[in-house]
View 1: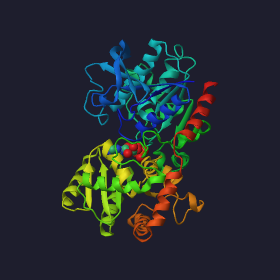
View 2 (view 1 turned 135 degrees about the horizontal axis):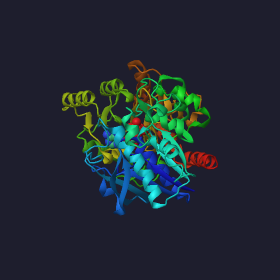
View 3 (view 1 turned 30 degrees about the horizontal axis):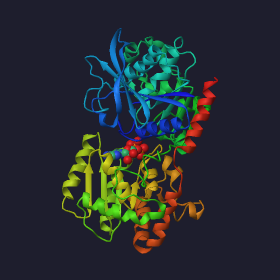
View 4 (view 1 turned 120 degrees about the horizontal axis):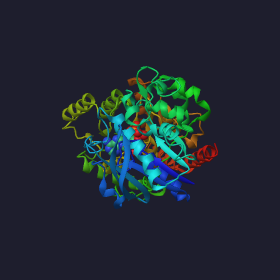
Length: 489
Ligand code: ADP
């Protein structure tokens, strides 16, 4: 099959969070199975050009109709760890992708709508005719809308699959976007069964448009598929998902087991696997050295991830102080686009600057993230909502015991050592229910007690976590079934 991913992120070139990992991992596994896979991305000025091989111009003058005129783009080709990627580079006064960051601008919906349209123009002009276009999140949710409304003649057999990684961000904007993208007809698109935002009736909602128009819609875990339909975690998308329920499914994300592999990971100093778990101690030592933590007979508790209200910031903070007060060290790696949260953690960092048991690293650092997964003993993921969550999967792969809140994909992947109905030998972490201090403590205290009180049992739990297969093997099978299904529609 011939599949093209149209996405705003791909690890390690342009990564903000899990979306980048998923595009990278799924595309890699599809290609390994012999399918033809290409990825279309924006060419951001801030992306990691050093991670792209054979970077060259693939298409010189791609004119993309926009705002009543047209914008000229250069399309670049590059190889990202064997993945074939095309990068759209528009030349216009808006400097859509030359702004120093991936997201966070007032015209983000316009930037991404332009990208979506440019990707389709690229396919049309180059004669590329994939069977499936796989789009991701609100950023490229306009692709199915454009495909159906504007490109039916040029791309009559192409089908669109939309994967929603996060319902919180939906790309809500005003009707100017319809004009800019060449869709026009606001009276038509502002209908409840089209792109109209369910809360603000004069606004359009790109994610909703994607849900309505895509041939299939997925989210990133079965439990979150239920939450999105039936709870506030769908952020108002419940009704649209109810209407489209026959084409909506939760598929658990996988992890790229080559990229995240403690046996071969080039970011970590000491390689190990289930048979040599003891070597993990050396990575703990290396982590301590790198972050100026003292040597002590204490476990390292870690948090890696965005510092966002989604992630349970109050519990991350509580986990930190609870660990320090209970014979553990704490390491944090994270950043936040929200000034308030970022400032808060900078203050906390200053406050704890002289504490030899604690280090806060504020920023994005792929290399350090790998060392933390390899060197830490326990990872906390106390999210308020979590569509899938990759940090717990990476932790399991690296023998780091996850302590998570029972929500979304965390509930689908982590099974409490003491209370899960799963067979004892399949249990892999600690789980708590309520998003409060007592909840977190109920799980973190058990993890710390086990580490101090029964090292052999803790080690057994680490090994049980490492034995789980959260690779792309199974999820890819499920996506292929969906591709096959929509192809014949
Ligand atoms: P989300 O997509 O909501 O951000 P996920 O758990 O699905 O969360 O994916 C997070 C991914 O981003 C993981 O690969 C994690 O290691 C990585 N990550 C998050 N924050 C950072 C950071 N500050 N530095 C390095 N990697 C990070």
